[in-house]
Image 1 (cartoon, rainbow, N blue to C red):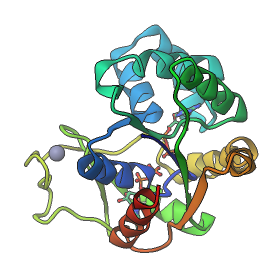
Image 2 (cartoon, helix red, strand yellow; image 1 turned 135 degrees about the vertical axis):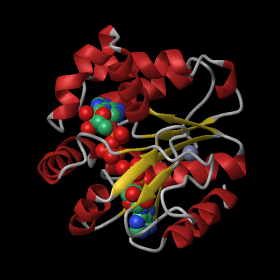
Image 3 (cartoon, helix red, strand yellow; image 1 turned 90 degrees about the vertical axis):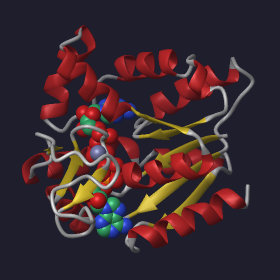
Image 4 (cartoon, helix red, strand yellow; image 1 turned 120 degrees about the vertical axis):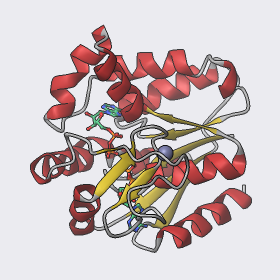
Length: 216
Ligand code: ADP
Ligand code: ADP
Ligand code: ZN
């Protein structure tokens, strides 16, 4: 199964992807995580992506399409995958269709996570992740059970993203509305778009997503 999670920054895509991965046994492909890894490793791609990411702008289609094209060839993608943060432009969506068509595959479902812009700024400002296993947390909405200890791996090291500040978030939201929102009618026309209420509690959103997936 090929699932796309679509929604603005902070909508809860990564949070829900981690859960779907666990229950459905699908691998999560997050272009944001891959680009951050490339940036950290100082690769050519990472160097090219850095200034766009820091400014809250999209990295070029060419770069992210190249990353995804390589990644979906790997063995762990054979049973399907969950795309988190890709595609983000119509050109990326068209390229994805083409890549999948060559393998006799297609996008099975696109889950739109709808959240008010006002809530997104607080979600992103309070976001942090485990430095060891990448488990996501939030200062008020989702704290580890034991303060400062990761529930998943016991690590006490956490990261905050340099682009998770209020100024960059405003830019990222504008980018979402201008460049990514056109994917909604694109996928609606294909009959694969389903919308969930991303304003609900984290567990409730998971229930809504599982309902969508169980109906396929
Ligand atoms: P995205 O991957 O869409 O950018 P995340 O999954 O990283 O978003 O979520 C952003 C922040 O909001 C995280 O700190 C997460 O813990 C929190 N969060 C996610 N879903 C919800 C929700 N339904 N209600 C409240 N906070 C949430
Ligand atoms: P969020 O969902 O919180 O906005 P991501 O981790 O998905 O953040 O992405 C972080 C940054 O990486 C984006 O602001 C953008 O610069 C870049 N990026 C990630 N995915 C893509 C993509 N599909 N196309 C272009 N740029 C991307
Ligand atoms: Zn951890």
